[in-house]
Image (cartoon, rainbow, N blue to C red; front, side):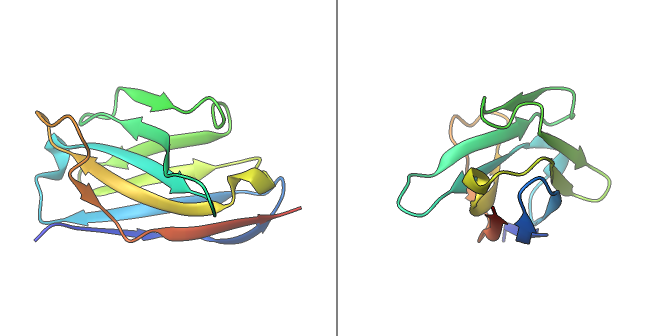
Length: 119
């Protein structure tokens, strides 16, 4: 059974930082591409960042470029999202997702962790 468990969310003031983590189990983690998405109240879920299986390839939404960094530790089956210079508009539930090497869509999702940025 595949499980993705996010942690690290919370309340932070604008300009602050948070580090999200996602612990994966039940899948060959080092073969999977990983990503973070977020969903703000009243909005659709949106892509934030992704990292390929080996960690060398990353992509970011324009809104977070230069502020967020995605990384992974294949030895510990974890993926992280370092979020700096947080803004109130970053407030959302953040989800970890996994995509198999041959998959087009993300196959597995975590339950989400709330990030709230106060102004």
